[in-house]
Length: 95
Length: 159
Image 1 (spheres, rainbow over the protein chains, first blue to last red):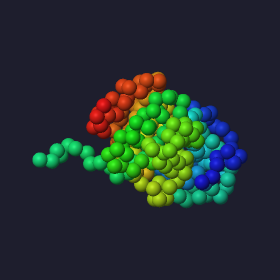
Image 2: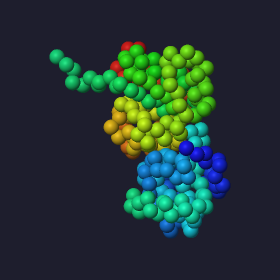
Image 3: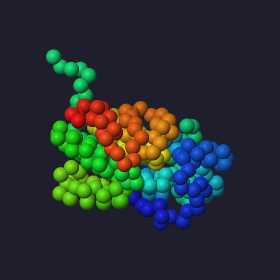
Image 4: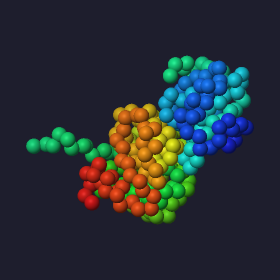
């Protein structure tokens, strides 16, 4: 288990965004997006949320929702070519 | 004659707690843990460090909640099949709480899932639940009594 704060991330949507808003944002704003289920491991963290969870990819940048119990969900972007390649191999295209 | 509507007593239960900013949560977590343990169910609770500290202070000898765990670690163990439960109760007073409940539904498909939706305005949160579970819903922030009554009814505990 890692810590999200150790990642060099960019906030795409601020804390307090709803899970649905995060999914819709990814689907509307990224030409490449993938779906995973809760419990999918990304950057050594288990992603939680309402399935299907949408992950956006722009080159080596992965955009994904992250939920903190006190604040709700926010959408983060992290640049990592290896992890982007892994998502392309292990995630699915269909909801 | 056996009552076929009677629900079996679960061997194990997991309480998933949200952020402790709504006071009724901690009181009801202890109430639920007390009643579950009284009927013979092993109880484990998971939450963020703040809520776990509140519970540790309230239950120093661990009479009600013998085992507590940080939520992320608990999810990790469930994903890795190191932890399971027959009953999962999720407290939800925010969008985050519903996300945790949805996650538990996905990760524990055969467990009985009960989602307690509470806080100042539980209505919009209930509308987000589109997965199979039992819901206990009540507007409750400081006063746990109505919610306690509903919980007792669902679990068939004496008042």
